[in-house]
Amino acid sequence: MIVAIDGPSGSGKSSVAREIARRCGLTYLDTGAMYRSVALACLRRGVDPEDAETVAETARTVRIEFLPDGDGQRVLVDGDEATAQIRTPEVELAVSPVSANPEVRETMVAIQRDFGARGDIVAEGRDIGTVVFPGADVKVFLSASPEARARRRAVQRQGGNLATGEDMAVDADAERAILADLVRRDDYDSSREASPLRPADDAHRIDSSELSFEQVVDAIIGLSPELAERAEGRRP
Ligand code: DC
Image (tube, protein in one colour):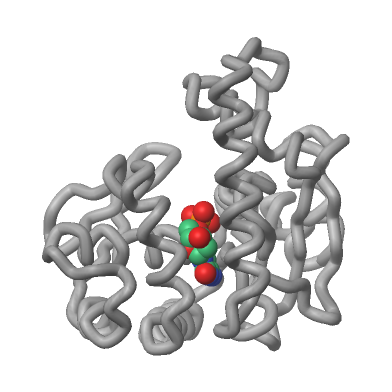
């Protein structure tokens, strides 16, 4: 079974996809982490993220590994620890041109399809329902207002738990900076030529601005009898 969850930065798709994977016994695939890993490999190897040919070569030769780690996962890039490094502002800047590179996308999509061919997965990203798995069993396009998304990121960066701590006070300047960066990345991801962010025609659209984390997870599981059965433990 393949569950595809797409949406803009900060829509909550990573936490939601991870929870669906846990409750329904699916393997979680974070495709954003793959593009971030290529961007990190470029920075480590001294490759200019705008140098399309060398970036494409980096994508073809980099080794990206996901290792289960408690409730989350560790990421190794070329055998070296990269879990925290792929979330730094430097990588966040480099990842836009890297993920807009059609040859990089071709390489990543092939790996993602191979992953899907080997088991039941929930994959999240920008083009999962449109390009990677157009025949996915369940497709969701998860969005939220830019303000709601910026707030969640700010809570997350201050160490808050999105499932329980959405009311925590956040630094207003930090929240403003996050909002500006989200809007910049949304524009870039939606207007690029290669696989722009857009909902698949047959995707279920969910706006999570006014929904709790649990409500979003339950709404997605409720879309599919197979997911509901898995969550009830009938199909572990
Ligand atoms: O979801 P994220 O913020 O970790 O994604 C990091 C970057 O990778 C983001 O700028 C969009 C891009 N991306 C993409 O182009 N296609 C995907 N399937 C996933 C992420």
